[in-house]
Amino acid sequence: MHSDLIGKIEKARRYAQEPERIALDEITVRFHGGNNEHMVRLEGGHWKCDCEVFHLRHVCAHVMTMQKVLEPMLSPEAREPGPVIIHSELISMIDKSRRYAHELERIEIDSLHARFRGSNNDHTLTLVESRWVCDCTTFRTWNTCAHVMALQRILAPMLPAAAREPGSIPTDERLVSALN
Image (cartoon, rainbow, N blue to C red; front, side, top):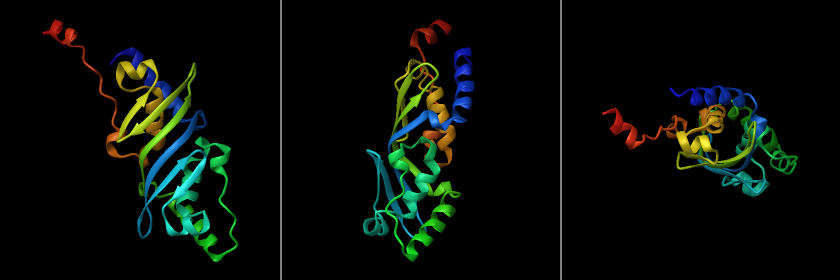
């Protein structure tokens, strides 16, 4: 393995211990609730969920769970609780949210857009259809980087299997023919 890539793996381990380096701008997840599957989305600092409770109350256990699980990576606006409802449903939502936060396999990330504060520069990362993209030079070379590896480590239980896979190292055809 290339020594540069080994260094990136070590950096990714360090970064994974510092989730506050990541700013999630957008995320879309499929949330496997107790009864149904729901789509939960963060966009522009605002949460949306397609469940009936969210449509009625503008807050639900699914959004509360995402806020709890992703808290260090969220903007202050996205961390804000929904409207306070003095209703018996609130207790139920809090209880479900606490339980769901320990059952991360209920959550599957479909897509995300994030900014990563690296050691030297800030970088933009996206995940769409289980494919990662980062704007750093290491990613362009190796199809992976410390930023992607850190997010894979942090979000692993919520990522589809293909998005947890390591990057594929591109082969240079001239190198292959020279070795043959």
